[in-house]
Length: 155
Image 1 (cartoon, rainbow, N blue to C red):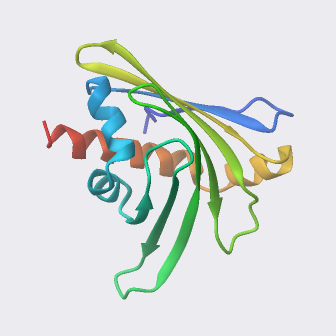
Image 2: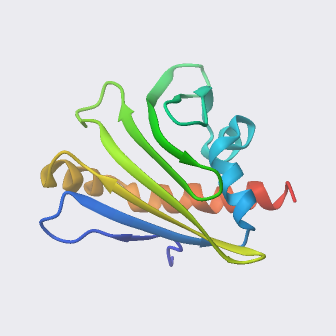
Image 3: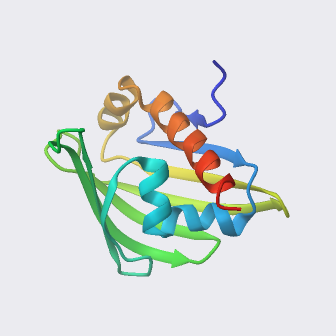
């Protein structure tokens, strides 16, 4: 299966760059990252908090069908430019992974297409490489496919 979401992870670097083009107008792609109701749909998670603004914070919780919490994640939004950029921290509770820094840039390609570029900075090369050993690439591609599908149905 060809992954539409591309991950560039240079050897020896403590960051990676993720890119994905969407068949969505820029405003809708951005909305998918900042409106709790949409985030919950494409990420299959519960949004406990999502303050889409500079110095805002966010917290998500994913549970199994029986209600057991599988994952809690959260962070702080450091920069917020509507339809252009979000800079935030990302931390997963109860995992060995330290906080990471994420730079999300949203770009209009034309009236109906847009591009997301994410640079994720890890504390160390080892932390980044450990993340990449998980089914990370497949998971983010699946999430982005779901984002495309959910937001298309909003149009």
